[in-house]
Length: 520
Image (cartoon, rainbow, N blue to C red):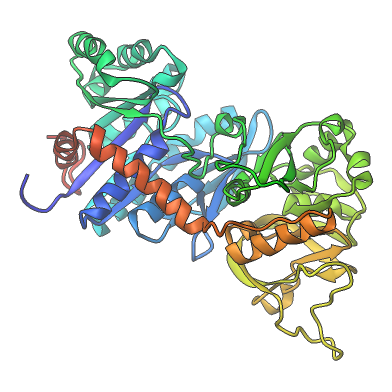
């Protein structure tokens, strides 16, 4: 078609982890390649993997990735409502990038209509500034118990006037039943919004699906827009808990001195994307650990972030990990909640209300939780030279000889170091520059994303290897380049296997900005 491409589209899935986020990221890259100004949008996201925008707002990690795929800066309008589970039935609700309240599931469901205007305003803000807005649904649009208060799937598509694609995961089996069943459960007016099916994650010959696709269209009136193949090692910022449970192999052959990295699989693990860069290094094997028996004899132990620090610390004790970790001849690093757990004690009257709780006592720090959440992008310097190496000169001033680091912070707990060697020192703010300490082979910091920095990651892993008498040398992999290449692989597959002329017609069919409904 000729003319400037303007409009919107929603991508829904028959299930969680069907591939909605990855498809939207690939479509963002496809449009950006064509010079289209495109923005991602997910009205409501439930994830413990989040990102921080430049202005300190908190959004879902997937929307940040999609923004990077589109070549634009992530912003809070791209994910106006973020749900961060704090327990089996409770979650912290983040609205417009800031904590709003902690709700039980039933209370939040009753509250959702109050948030719909803010969701619509966020979408319209993006439409005013971008040619195309690609919307992502959540879970399945056929959750019949949630129809009356839906603010993220087809009820929203109806309000803002965008058609939808429906994605099904053939790798799990039953894709035709899930596509048909989803459409059949929809109210007629929402059924009409579903204009195309995408079959995702095929391992095999797409020609074998032709008869099924024909029968599917005859049954539903909805065409199959394309069949996307399984793409190996598309690890793109996984945010769904189902994705976290998959094996964690390194994608390339291991070296002779393989590093064994044990990651404690906390029940409420957050920002597990901190591990992604480590997976890409040859000779590094990551594995989940659920109890003391599973620790083995690792070279490195990682205590990751958590949205329920005290509860996960109790879980860690119940599994015997509190006693087992100090006995290891391994380097240990705690990130955010993991750092807090490594300290002497935690005073939590905010998240759990537990008051003062003893930590693991491996680092001389104390944590006090504050009701105001810290969310900011940060830069600084790290020192990983080893035991006895001090980052200060004789006058006590930082000598600047460390490694540059960058990342982001998301935490309620204020960690107060009372000893140890400085590990991470931030450029700002002046009052909280020391943001990580080390004692011997134990390190901690609240900075997420440290391992994304190639220079820091390589030096840290070299130190881990040297402590164990191993010789580990990075093959020079660049995390940023690998993530960009992964996005490009998805976009390439979309260009090859999707009917993009049809997708473009759907985008153009969206209602003009300011016109409610009215899909063309």
